[in-house]
Amino acid sequence: MRADPWFRLGWILLTVSGVFPVAVGIGNYLSFILSVSDSHACWLTSFGRLGFSFDVLRSFRTDVAGAWVMLNHIGSVNLVMSGVTLVVVSWAGIRRRSRWSWLLVLFGTIWVGANDLLATFIVKLDQAVPVPIAPMALAAAGLALSARGVFSAPSRATDRETRNA
Image 1 (cartoon, one colour):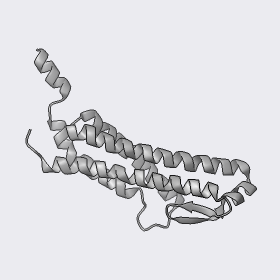
Image 2: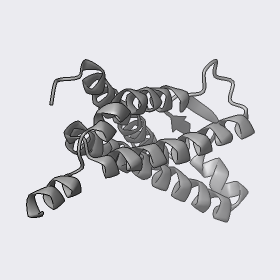
Image 3: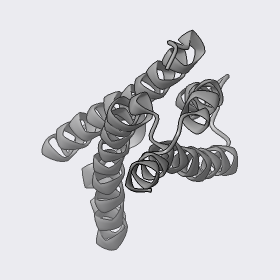
C-alpha cells in the first residue's frame, strides 16, 4: 500500500492527543497528593490554588471532603489511563490500519469530548478556551485524516477469507 502522508499525520495527531490527558492527569495526581499531604494549604490544582484547604473542607463536612478526595483521585487516575489507552491504540492499532481501533477512538472521542464540554459549560469556567477542546480537536482531526487509510485497506478478516477460499 502506498504511503499516505495524511493518514500518517492522522495517527500521529491521535497519538499526540493522548499525551494531553496523560500530562494533565499526572499533574492533577501530583497536585492531589500535595494538597492532601499539606492539608492546611489551599487546594492545589493544575491551574493554581483554590480558595480552600483540605482542613477547611473536612471541618465543613467530612463526607464532602471524602467525596472530594475520591473524585480528585479517580479523575486524575482515569485521565492518565484514558491517555495511555489512546496513545497505545493509535500507535499499535490505527497505525496498522485496524478498523476496531479507529472505531474505539471515535467512540472515546465523542463520549469523553461531549461529556468534558458539557461539564465545562455547566461549571462555566473562566478560561478563554475550555481545556478539553484541545485534545478533542486533535483527535477529531486525526480521525478525519486517518479514516480513508483505515477503511480503504482490506480488513485482516477479508485477507484470511480470501486465502482460505
